[in-house]
Amino acid sequence: MDLSFTNEEVAFKSEVREFIENNLPADVKDRYSRGIHFTKEGQERWQKILNSKGWLAPNWPGEYGGTGWTATQKYIFAQEMGRASAPPPMPFGVSMVGPVIYTFGNQEQKDYYLPRILQSEDWWCQGYSEPGSGSDLASLKTKAVRDGDDYIVNGQKIWTSHAQHANLIFCLVRTDQDVKAQEGISFLLIDMDSPGITLKPIIGLDTEHTLNEVFFDDVRVPVKNRIGEENKGWTYAKFLLGNERTSIARIAQSKLRCEHLREVASAERVDGGLLQDDADFMRKLNQIEVDLMALEYTELRMLSKIEHGETLTAEPSLLKIKGSEIQQRLTELLVESLGMYGAAYEALEVREGRNDQNFAPDYAHGPMAEHLYLRAATIYGGSNEIQRNIISKMVLGL
Ligand SMILES: Cc1cc2nc3c(=O)[nH]c(=O)nc-3n(C[C@H](O)[C@H](O)[C@H](O)COP(=O)(O)OP(=O)(O)OC[C@H]3O[C@@H](n4cnc5c(N)ncnc54)[C@H](O)[C@@H]3O)c2cc1C
Image (cartoon, rainbow, N blue to C red; front, side, top):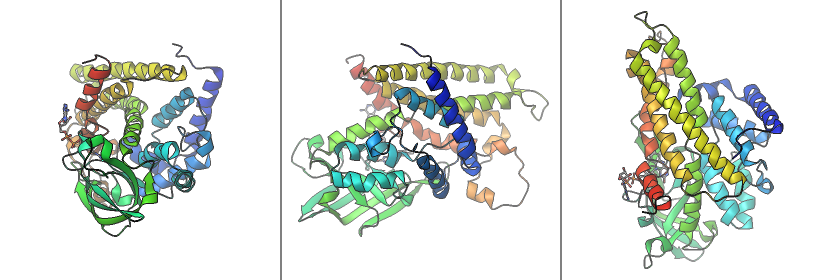
């Protein structure tokens, strides 16, 4: 395994760094670096800048608008994005449904949907989970019954992130009740404006609206909006989940959080002391940094495997578990580092509308919100317990 970069790769890294430094809007960076949710307008603006450079979808094949980069270049790009606090593109279009469309969709679907994802014309959300069908996804009950050239869809999705911004949802639906659960599922692309769709917000621990319930009541969906074959949706769904898990570790972003914590630890506190003299605090920070370094090397080993055409086994699950746990430990420590200022959390909308003096340092705004939201990191993308089951099967043969 060779982990050093070539001269070309070092030059590529500088090019990426310079582009991001010169083009990332300050307001977009500010929100992301604090761990506050994006605004649709800001996210769209940044995605359009990336797309104008041809860098919105590094993982897509060149023929569909991807970059044609090697796995190492993609790694460098992701590292530089994280290092600069540049938000990645919304995953639902670029990393989830886009690859499903170019891998399993027909020509008409590719021609229509892929350019619209690249140009941020469509906003997608993910309609997988249902009440009672999360980890056991194959038990999903939302039903699609064929009626001429349409399916009629009835049922409910839940935990649908950012559905309030989306004009399209990709959905797993049951098209055959009489076969093994995995064999009766189809993958549909549904217009969120279709009559019969209603949304109900779910307000999270962080008091923000990122999650939703989506209800389908006799929703007509053209059969031409089905991906691939009827009842073969489980294959496409699993392909998508593999892509989702590898992008959740967010190592570069965690490294930046560690750097920030070191700065905070060296700044004088109200009582005149320094946090870096607090042995317990520093032990926790040092341990996270060691674990993060180990995770980074695991990711590099995975990269080396990909470059050499080897097949991955449980690596995405491992990255998901360790990456999400580190994110949680880091935000917990960030809140701890703020002492009494950490507890005072206000949603951004509330804070932006106020004209009184902030009593806490500027960097105190964000960590509590992120800490609360990231409680979910060990659940979304397939819970960590489920990832451990995958590892025990694939690696330990249990
Ligand atoms: C913030 C957030 C955003 C999300 N966004 C989306 C989205 O956009 N679209 C979407 O479709 N879904 C989304 N989800 C849903 C997410 O995928 C599910 O929450 C997740 O798969 C777990 O399913 P569940 O909530 O039904 O929990 P359950 O499956 O009921 O699990 C409950 C607990 O039991 C454990 N458990 C279950 N089965 C096993 C087992 N076999 N072995 C060991 N432990 C087990 C789980 O690990 C968990 O701790 C989101 C969730 C969150 C929290």
